[in-house]
Image (cartoon, rainbow, N blue to C red; front, top):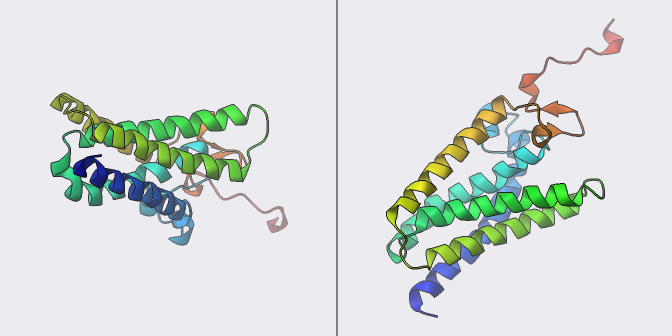
Length: 190
């Protein structure tokens, strides 16, 4: 393995650990912030499948902001590699979740394991594209557009989620955050 590939591989392995750790912290960040809407844009605001996609996406964005400065001169495919990685991660997590819940109820440890596998898959695909021959620059433009559009819809659907299954928090029967709902009246207040 040549020196550049080994260097990039180390970064992608570190990135998998970064995604797992930071994504796990983002799972709790909204509650830890006292339900701050700004923090809610980048962390899960409920237990829906959609909100869990934000954990991987934003932890990858944070890692991109660090990694780019260290490997940008060693690859020409950075943006498309990161876009393909996060796309694969999220496709895996969603597909795996809906596949296994066809046969059983949601199981926390399986969800955690699928997130970890998704992080590894993200970084593996990213690595393969990072070390590939130089792709046409249009692919990096496509990567930037994808990453930007994805950020926009993650934020937009945090504040105004469609009433579709992927956005539903099954335990509460609600979509989105508590700021989307009127407080329920307590029967004892009457």
